[in-house]
Image 1 (cartoon, rainbow, N blue to C red):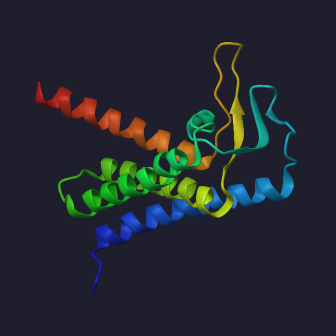
Image 2 (image 1 turned 45 degrees about the horizontal axis):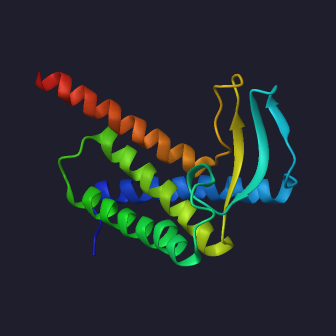
Image 3 (image 1 turned 90 degrees about the vertical axis):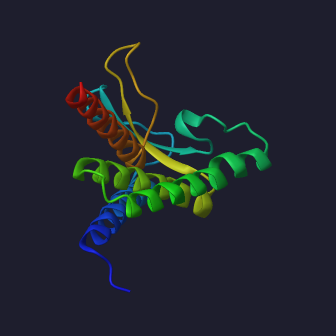
Length: 164
């Protein structure tokens, strides 16, 4: 079976996203002591080593094991599989949307892999601009998923503007 240039590009972006995320997590697990905080840019951007047993911002960490399995593993795998099939089959997607979906899939797979392999997801970046404007602790996969979603929103707004 010969893969099209488009399919190879999609797979390369997904694999590259997973690789960047997993390498960053290996480095954090190896070199950042759990529970510590290191300044990257003052107190605005810091490095941590936190094991997140829930989903985004720890949500779902107190669910019973069956619900956790369904909501944090099975459902994401099904959704990621569906999105991957959609991206591979839909030849009408513009390049930016293709990249966005690919990095979302890669980030999602990377975090699902962590849940399967380690029972948790390693998070390490934290940004705090002031007491009210700050993030939770996150990782590269989260950053890829968020970036992909922002790109899709921008593309969607552009298309609506062009249609009106």
